Amino acid sequence: MKREYIEKVRKIEISFMSFCLLALLTVLVSCEDWLDVRPKSQVKEENFFDSEDGFRDATLGIYTIMSSTSLYGGEATMAFLDVLAQQYSSVGQNYKQAMQYNYADDGCKTRFDRMWTTAYNGVANCNYILKNLQEKGRVMPDSLRRLVQGETMAARTYLLFDMIRAYAPSYKTGMDSLAVPLIREVTNSPVTPTTVSASLDVLINDLEEARELVKDIDPLGPAKTTYSELPESQYWADDYLADDGFWLFRTSRFNYYGMTALLARICLYKEDMSRALLYAQEVINSGKFELINDKIMSDEQLSFPSVAECMAHHEYITSLYIYDLKRSHNDLYYLDAQAALTISNDRKTEIFGGYGLDFDFRVKRLFSIPSGNAKEYINKYMTGTQIPLLKLGEMYLIAAEASGDIEYLKTFRRMRGYNSNPLPDGEDLTAELQKEYQREFIGEGQLFFYYKRRNIYQIPNTLVPTTQDIYVFPLPDQEIEFGYSNSN
Image 1 (cartoon, rainbow, N blue to C red):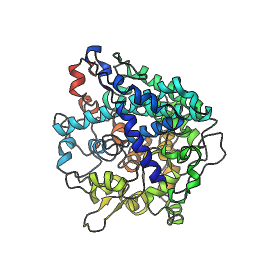
Image 2: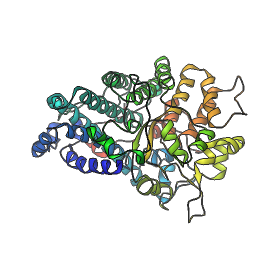
Image 3: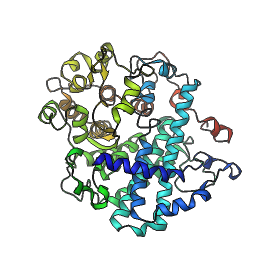
Image 4: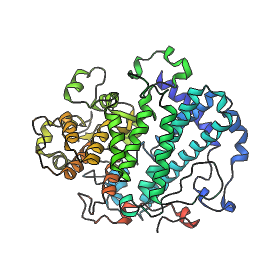
């Protein structure tokens, strides 16, 4: 049933996107350069939001954009960003220049351009939903209107924050430098970027507002005592009758705790340790998520046959649902010879350590030899249907860093298999956190941003000093031509 539901949404989403192909990037340029397609599509827009169905479908359409291989369905998770983080020990021809930070290479430029364009496409769609909510939100019950508004604001914030992380200096090295345009309304006027610090404040405020909108109505929120999510095969047709199942599968969307987890991530990036800790603790202490270990995995092997599926059920806070995850995403990067992103046994030993190879359930369960192959591959996305955007493990790592309390890290490590190898008192917390980022986020695109946030002088496994020219992605050529620059 869920597959049929998602396919229905995708078909409707295509018609919605047709009127949102704004000059996503040209909002940064003069009105003379603005390609105004809205009048041609005005009838479609008006019809689309005449009922609550349109708002529901448009909201889910945002996640379809985010699932694109140009973004979190590929390049911003398992592929390009992890290649730049030197997560892989070997890559195919398509990624060799990226591994060497040759940003002038056509392949790298194309990926930078598509990431920017797709993200701002998502932002533009979010803005159209919010605009129409103001004008036509009365077609929905108040609870549905608030859920749509809160989710849309959170998705927009997630996209804009990643554009800041990618295309602007980090807070540590350039808090007063210009960030990227925060396009938060439908407009054909240029949007002037503000500083990194000011931009992060805007995003934090937006997320706080979004949280308040959904706090008392979200099924996965503090107003509900418990929340459980069945495997998709266990839902029946009747479960989809109310609002087309819009209130189901909250961990595949921006729920209250997903917004809270994103606040923890942004506040840590902004070096606001006290707020980062509070948000991370709220998620950890909510009781809605739990870290898994080998025992939980073994107990639930029938319902969730892979570690990725089990982790999705217990640890994912917000993720993207992608029905054809293996064929259309995983295989493009891990099995296709032109990408061939792999981690060798030597690299695994380097990442997990000799003890970890024997006891860390991630290394034991996240690598396998597919049928018909002689080579071992990462299997995180070979089964299941979800790519994580925010998960519980990160909250423990944020809490440890923000508080300086190594007990958070010890708890996290115990659940990952290090029961008989606890960290000794006096261990370097920063060094141990870096090891866990290398282990925990394989194929998730977070490691590069960790290095950038910490301003690591030289990313491990490369001989190239990691300058700001590497950490700050180049803008699309058309942005430079139109006068926008991220150089300060």
